[in-house]
Image (cartoon, rainbow, N blue to C red; front, side, top):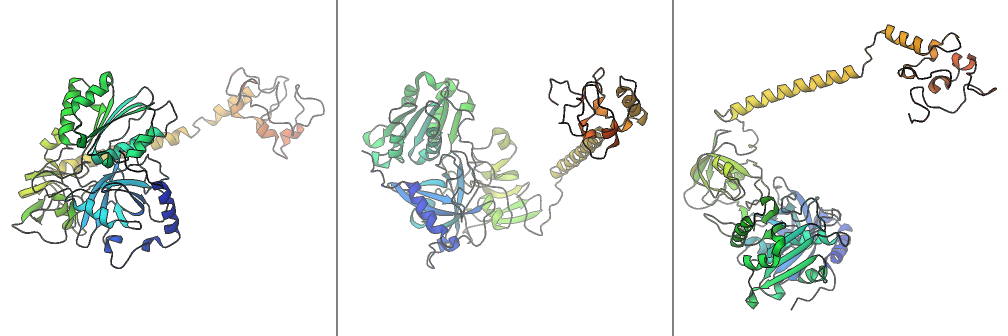
Length: 527
């Protein structure tokens, strides 16, 4: 049994909400004095832009979808690809919570972002979003990012197999919506394997059912744990059949399922480039306390540690539950980051002394061996030294790093000098090419010879044109009048006094004929 379809679509509701917001001051839209979460944080998080919620709808039990726009507009805050995600900063009275959510839209830049959030048990962020975020709420969001997207070229010859568990359907739904917009007959052959607890908890259930009811391009298989029908790797591969080896695989679910599936696909020799996995944004590792990532504004408890920044020679205190990223931000440093959940790899920093765990699944073996960790999830164990902490606070100077910064600086200087030399050489060569370097005698000799008339008359030096003499053997004066650009100028002596050429009609003025091809072009060619 499927949940009842809402009477009005989310996009229709969004249109009326936007109309209401556009008619008022959006910065104060639906804000009340007793709801501080409606307003933006006092301090803007780094690398984020303000956004506003313009529609909200409950689409399944404990699951809501919201539409988000750039404040004062009706469109997406930034372009994106179906399947990408954004990180939201949710301001509370005590702290700013960060959480990454997948975009569910088809990638249309003129439509708002759509995010779908399922309230999780003991989930600080999802509970706050479910209870506090409403139409008019102002938030901060990162730019969209992520590589969990469709192949560059898809068509009827492409095979896609998509696997989702629970709210893992959100990035896959964006890709399915994009495929549904393709012309009939051009969609790739697609399979969807989707695991849910019960029919009522199938997120986007009605829309999925209506997407391709005749299964021309989309075949769906739903697994309901309430019926004892659990999704397994064996069931998926059995359904995929012979298409498994050539398909592009998209998996957004539990780690155990992904590991088992990867092993089986490796046996089938499916290339790694055809296996795409999305990471559930939940924290795991030492000191994990749930899926919420937060910048606290109050001191922790217990014995503090220390963090030394080689680049600035600074020593920072670290609270027991601080990640490297939160410790650096608390001291005014601005390292790069995006998702804050270990899913993108943008925040990696190099540990040169000590230990920080976990390093992060997004890093390669080479990066781990070099000492890199994802600062948004890695926590220092004891005393730790970092090569760099990102952009330092105002007034803090970078210092030379023996064995680290000097070689790179020297290499950068050498590369800059080489690039300058190459650029200067290119500039000189370009200027030389634009300059006429022929001696005057060359030009006069060529003009005199090439413009010599066949009737023995004296050539008119003012009516010669270098472009009319470059092709040897080309008739220059007998079959056609002189260059049109010379004869059309009023008051030109040579245009009014020269006798008409043998090809001109009697009585026809020489200064007013229609322009003809130049002497360098044959009559049958275009100039």
